[in-house]
Length: 338
Image 1 (cartoon, one colour):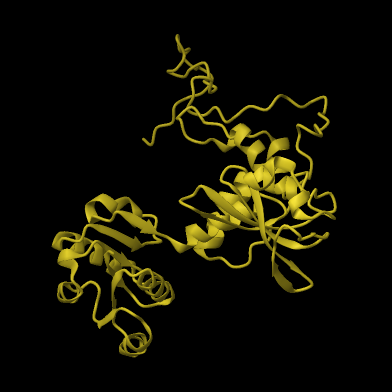
Image 2 (cartoon, rainbow, N blue to C red):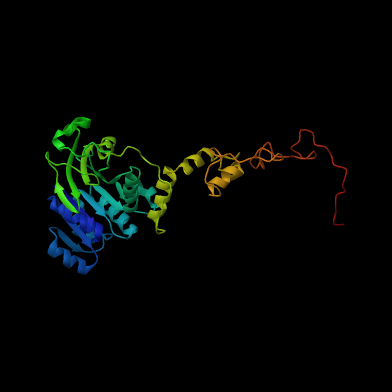
């Protein structure tokens, strides 16, 4: 049993307090809102204290001097970081803080924060994990990460169809996979050796971590199709993270963009390195890339060159000091204000 302090009784804090106290840990919850404190005191098997998590007196009252862990999950990131900093100075062994501001995440060592909790990043990771595996709608690790629980829909090519599960021995049988439950016509049932699955049944499979392909094969998913279009609703930080980390990393357009993203002579990205045909494809002027459908060139067109300004190859007239032997110009007269 560990002594754990939780700062903030919002949705995350209340869930953590309920779960950890249910696992017989000594949980203290610190919350400013009196109504929440009174409500949780009557329903939660934990000590609930009214106070500010960033206040030393509240932390002392919560037992920060001898706590094993503090988890700060209020909506105020400054309070979360301050709580962890103060608690660690008082003697708390480990600190977890809910922080979403990327600029603040660089201050972990100075603030004595051992682990960042970022719900948006976690949600993005989970959604990306599911979307990158076509046909799977649910995936969770358990058993210290050794096993995966995978939810999916039985396809018509699944080897699990029309036979008792006890008679199916593909992929090592129950030594390497196990069907635990299924849903058919909105009716949930536990699976056993006599269960016969049907097409479009929703099933729960357990496989070893790293053996997702076995689950895909058992579900009858033979081909992983690349996503062509993604619609993200909302302009939150999470949606921006999806756009950046999932969409661009998982589409052909981004992979080919990375091949053609070039550095200029100063070591920084130089947009003029992108030729007009690739530029048009990247900006959706046409659907097929120049690699798949090269544009016809006019007879008068020259090969594309990046902007050479500032480089050794930049144009220098005959009188330029950059010339090895500058030639004096005599076809004009210098102007003088006098």
